[in-house]
Length: 408
Image 1 (cartoon, rainbow, N blue to C red):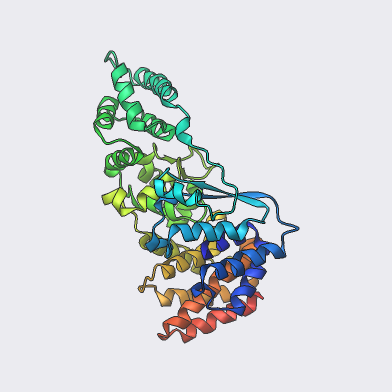
Image 2: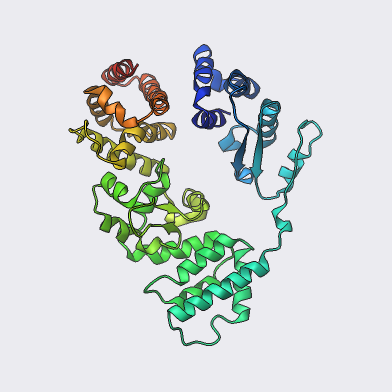
């Protein structure tokens, strides 16, 4: 419920005042019963702005990946409480999930007094479409690479690949990028794909295994996966104090799973959102696992360094420095939420002191009132953490409170 409320506030900043008031009135709300949390953090704030609120759809993906340990309560309680809280609101929830029997049972429960519509994607027959796509694109690869093997691939090979894809087009398109990459052995790569396990995870593993020859092949994709907002190559280079050549070199082996623009007119991003899910799950990614704490810590320190070195803050120096000002607190909060105890309080203190100098000019980098409000909420979380630690954080707390006062 708190996560859902947080995402609502990010989408509809006008809800922020009511949500903050609810937390102020009851600071222990996050430990209360789920229905009370929903009423305080969702229902009341939504009713307060219901006349101005647009109609919208809320997407909750991967419901089958929910566990009682991570969600802190049974899935059926979460679903019934959430749907009960928003049944009179002008939006709908789109749940995406594998059709597990226990999930079907939850949505068919007679006490769930809401209208449910099921859209079974398995009813769409995609195998022939995937087959035709693979045949056309691999023929193009054969021509481009001047492969003198006939037939390549055979019809049996194509059907094997269709089976590996499980009817998912993102598998097919990723495979084509992987097999058709420059300076690779396309025949060998296709053979490895046919001998591997089914599904996208196996293909992601093959791509990352083959990328090991490139320096920093996992470091840069790791940072990209944990950025709050995607960045252009030059902006990412500024954040890392690298050259754009270094960025492109590190990503050279990952071009079948990451979109890297040829110029600097677009952002670097995964072709498919499932890549981040794969990399964040140790059980799925194995040696390619990306530790959230490590990457958030790196991004926090890189952002802090940019701000501490930003002496000419009356001039516009690009999206990279803007990213640092806007998101250093987000990455620090992520570390705190993961219970990381090795947070560098010296860096935090220096950062807050720096931000207090010419505060108005520095915060102008955030560019909008709503962004400043969100930033202040995250800063409040950092200060609350420092108070809980009770470990020589008095100076840090004082600086944080002074910074809040300057902004207000």
